[in-house]
Image 1 (cartoon, helix red, strand yellow):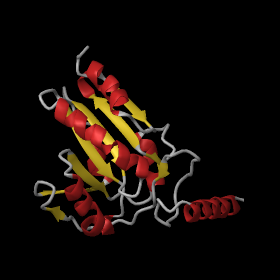
Image 2 (cartoon, helix red, strand yellow):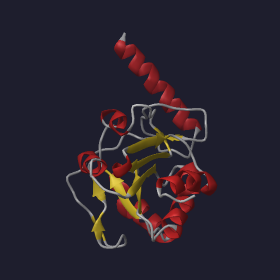
Image 3 (cartoon, one colour):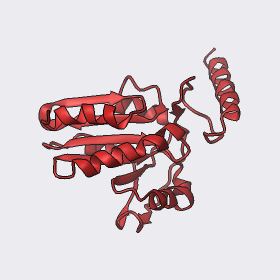
Length: 198
């Protein structure tokens, strides 16, 4: 019964992906009928890639390393936006995250853009995208394998669709996940109270 259900879900995902050219033709965790995209199953690699176009830092990160960042104690608001170059709503909202980063640069807020593109596409898609869009926020490329193994660790409410945003403010014991797109005004309305701004 489990195998039949798995194959039915896989067939449904493949058919959905074939009809939606904005996502890669790989198996996905779940699908939605909204503008949100689903996370493709990525392969893992042991190769740490140095990305000189991203301030000379390695941007490929495992989920364990990312999760360790989630656990840090700090008085800074961390905003982790999960996105991909092939996700239209993700790309549309990236400038809003960048603007928050710029407008509140003097405040304790850190923007981290977590790409869910395939690791193999780092040089051909991700780094050129970062350079073309002139992204100033920290960009990481998640190399985490099967999304089913880590999505619920980010949020039990996350179905797997992107864009998705995790906001953490450790000193205020605040952690909230949003499985949706934002306008700049919506994002700013969430950020300002967490920064103590009226």
